[in-house]
Length: 109
Image 1 (tube, helix red, strand yellow):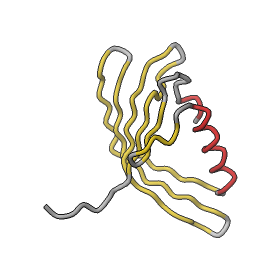
Image 2: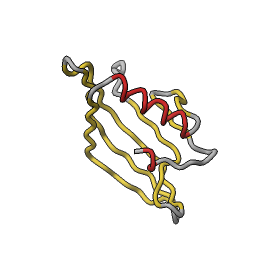
Image 3: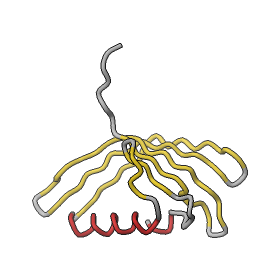
Image 4: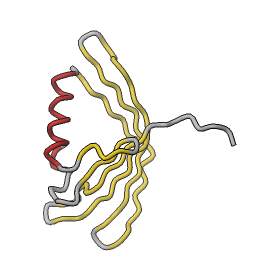
């Protein structure tokens, strides 16, 4: 999973309206922590849409369902949307900017 991120000073990830990760190393720390907290993390992607923006730059939008399990079973689940700004580097396509959001109730109107 680590090879998908651009090791670039512009890299960042936004989750539900806040910048959560400002560099690739902080993402690696979070991923490593998940591996120690849960026995299994299941992630299902669906409804992938990719839009080319410029040569070597694209945007991807993906819906996801995720479950976090420990030794007793499923602890919690998440679903939402993931958007990615992808750049093509010498090493291939990499995530430069990521954003995840989960559904929120909105007031009528």
